[in-house]
Length: 136
Length: 417
Ligand code: FES
Image (tube, rainbow over all chains, first blue to last red; front, side):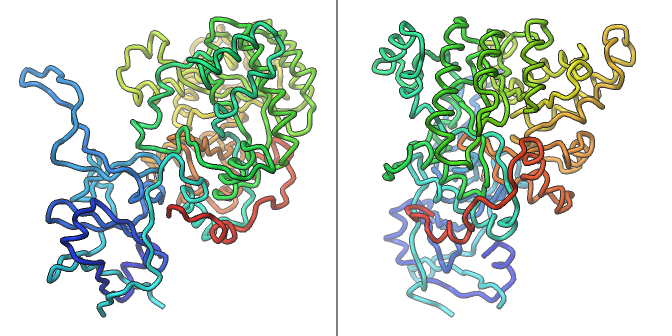
């Protein structure tokens, strides 16, 4: 199922499990009837994205999760070298290394490049995913 | 509708450096199944990390002293880099391990064929390739090795390994004979010995070296290759030790510039010294520099040659016209500006001169969809670039050689994805 198919059809809601349990994990990647979806738990927040990279269609949710790399610069403009962000995590596509902010799904440098979000919410303590079905 | 159990649900795992290629590339197989499973696809440049087999190549070195040194290094600090002059950049390619297939080590349980073949078949099947030309990535920098005799010894050993152990097993695999270009007479001997071997479809020079390609010491070599009617490829590479590139502090900067640099130098010497007029039937192929440098160089050389014809007196046409008759491989295809890419492909006659290459399993590899998804290409142009141009240049049989993409998807191990 492609992203376009998913946007086109009717939808159904799927309960993945209790949020308290699932949020102990950082990520789960699932296949629902052939559609890959990555679900991410960041503190109390939950996000879900289609497992298809906007670059060349790679399995973007199955790569590494890395802290954002920062260029550290002193007030006087001098370089303090590279550092890892303590707040921002990146989803890294394993095919060529495109990186996406886990909360926004956006590429850190080109904001026009982003993951396809899949609606997900916590409802009565359950993590509920809304998956659109393709038109018949 | 809310469902508490998920039909056909399964959790899928992380892709790492030891994941089976067919799982890493499952999305590419789906792209093939959807859009181009019936195309002939020839991958002119792939690298099956021969460092795993480096000790086999070291064992084939014909010089007793160098073989002993190499075998000693394999067991010790040198390991799979024995006798090589690798630069620090090689270990940075995976971006700190973010791109796991760079330098991959996947389990192979099938002992019936050489492990190299098993791994190569997986990626060929998964990407929908009918043929794959393998290239020794460990040897990309050998042109900068201070000991010419080591380049010669490794060239002989690698060519023997490829010709005796790899190519006879699977006719989908093809090879370009490695030429130790710092030693022209050794190149001639290799061309004489192996030039018409089945499976050897051309010759390759690693571009990263400081040797003027128009030097008279190469004229006999070019005549021999022209006579054989097989192309001569210049495979670009990088060298962080080059004084210009040593100013660049990040791998990406050095990689972006140096992979086009060496081919620009060699192609400029080739044209300005009128080599296309001196060897008019020698087909030239420029590998792994992407495409963006081509219109740049066409314009620069045309501009200067018009003003200074006395410095390129052997030319009968503009440099861009000669360049339009040469061949180029596609990877790494710069796709961020479609208008520029379209103009580039038009300027270089991509429809007849461009050959698809994957560069798998390197970090900046391109799947066939990189070409197939270009909105401005006709279906015929896509078929040409993905396989028919290479079939014509290398005289390959165009009958289907690969399994059906649907069968590859059904039979993959599904350890991840
Ligand atoms: S397909 Fe994801 S980075 Fe290329």
